[in-house]
Image (cartoon, rainbow, N blue to C red; front, side, top):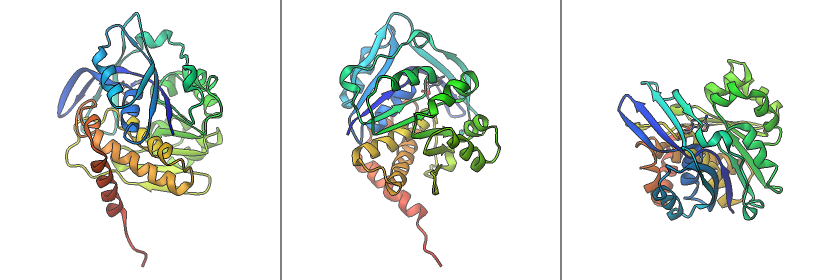
Length: 302
Ligand code: AMP
């Protein structure tokens, strides 16, 4: 079953202790749709400027991603500049230039409006809201955000969360959003506002899923070389949603499997700058790393 994703398509300039990339393809929707495309069909809604090369659009199409909803308008494409220190879990934003996103009014193409899975990738929560006004009874609505919006538009985000079932957020942002240092308390507080499932991304420490009944902890894959963590969160979400849409099973056991597939996709993504690794995988590699996760966490009761 297909996924509708709305989010940013960007040029990123990224610096890590291991290298630098200038104006490379990035954006929350780009990472998400590339990752999810290994599991299911994805339809993308976003905006880019006239400076966006057709070659990037063609590469998304080659992955089977439907780009009818990717609009090119006069102006410059969204740009994000970030830096990571040796703690690769924490991105430091140096510059955010919304450019064509500041006047973006998302129009969901008619044939996308009945898609069963909706992912609101990281963009302005007011735009995420407008998307939900145009879709018809999706089976699952999930959403991501970041500190830029938590600090800039907290009320719009809180209002949006009442309409969302799965909320994906990183650890520092969960603490900041809830105003709690305990992650468990932060999770419970955020869930009071709506989402039935909360997934907290913890970078190299993995991910935690909170539901009404339980907590699930997934590790991250112990990688020797991490080059660029940009897009880890979005490729994680792409794996989670892609697997859920592929299987159509929203029971908790299956959401746990989906979280491991999300962790697998994020682990590949961080092994290279931009989308170079994420866009050149085979499903066999993905499947093999999933099995490694199983061995990594397997232990017997006493
Ligand atoms: P993550 O998966 O959390 O590492 O997200 C990385 C992507 O988020 C980058 O490729 C950026 O282009 C994009 N991004 C950064 N800031 C924003 C923002 N304020 N709104 C939307 N997308 C953003």
